[in-house]
Image (tube, rainbow, N blue to C red; front, side, top):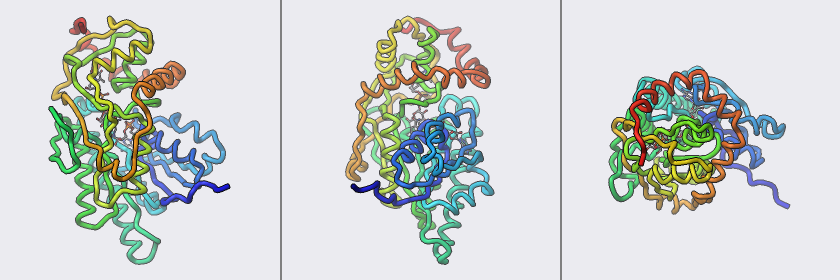
Length: 363
Ligand code: NAD
Ligand code: DAU
């Protein structure tokens, strides 16, 4: 019998590893039981949740390979010693919600741009140590970016070399972060790769985002605030596939390259909402048409041939992933009810009170 293969990067630093996609990456990696050690650096903002790592922390073999550090990627004193111990850094840490970036852009610049810079500087210092023979090799850096950097795509699909035309403070900050990564590859020869994932869904998704917000509101027979005509289109990617593709690019991606990670499941928001309500057995009358998101991107769609050429295939069909997600939220009420309290109530009021007051029947 053969055991698991030795990983290419036995010591990983995963920033933002208590968030939605980062925690999936950490859980899946540790569950392989291939000896990988993971240090998670997470600020535990409103979006970070230690409970997302509970399944790994309660398994003694996995817990022994997991270290959790609460801290800010924009703080060099926290970042430097962690990068010094890592063979690779995977940066999930970000402010990630478009609506919050419209309400308060500043935190987005601090984390999604300056935080990336601090991580890159720490990698550069380690690259210099490697050149002096003080460590075996420089760390590899993977920046988790987004399809939103391409802006709204009216027709066709975005390719990796297309112009970046971000249109929200969130996507502008993400574009800034990944352009810095590119500059560190070109200028300093840093071993860096970038992924651009599409709209991700699945368990542990913060209830501020469309799918979990609508599932949890519908469970409570609360109104579902659909922005504008609801005909905006997104390409849905299951969280396990997104995390798996990131791991694949980390292991096999070419330094300096960017890889799109499409879901292959383009749908109008209305279609997704109708299916969620069907799965939950709830009526369409819960849906309210509300004032649109300012600058709302109409559509995202990406070409995935570069990632396919690297040998990656998504595994989760959309129908199955959506049903599994609905089931997860119905079985994990304690998880999302704890999030939908405190800070959440202020945010919900700011984002939705006036919208819902002025809402109309969604047809
Ligand atoms: P999330 O908001 O669920 O998690 C972000 C995590 O980062 C949280 O745990 C938070 O506490 C942590 N964090 C925030 N600021 C930090 C800081 N300054 N220092 C350390 N930790 C900090 O986000 P997500 O949906 O899991 O997204 C993860 C990454 O993937 C982000 O970079 C996002 O831009 C990108 N992305 C997300 C999607 C999506 O659909 N969710 C799609 C493509 C790309
Ligand atoms: O495309 C990748 C991006 O997907 C990631 O980079 C972001 O981090 C992630 O948040 C997501 O951005 P979106 O803005 O596309 O996701 P969100 O779930 O906020 O919205 C999905 C669609 O649903 C979008 O067209 C806006 C709409 N929407 C959203 C909310 C929260 C509504 O109609 N009503 C809502 O209340």
